[in-house]
Image (cartoon, rainbow, N blue to C red):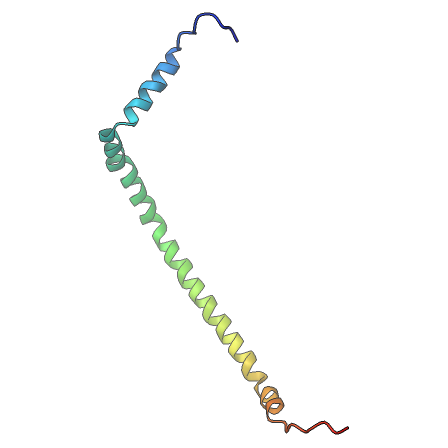
Length: 94
């Protein structure tokens, strides 16, 4: 680290600063979004959409199966629950 003359920016640093300046302009951002980002996202979503639908259907089936299993368990234990609930309450005798 020298405290003498400031160093002259290199070609790469100048190129990077110019690129950043160009990319920060509003018209450049709109062009990038219109011609690069939007088509790329549309293509990716078109390719991945069937898999998203498949995952949603599988999740719904899994949820239905889990609810059916829970219902079967409740129905199997229902006589036990009803018999315990209908037992007469007898007072405690000392």
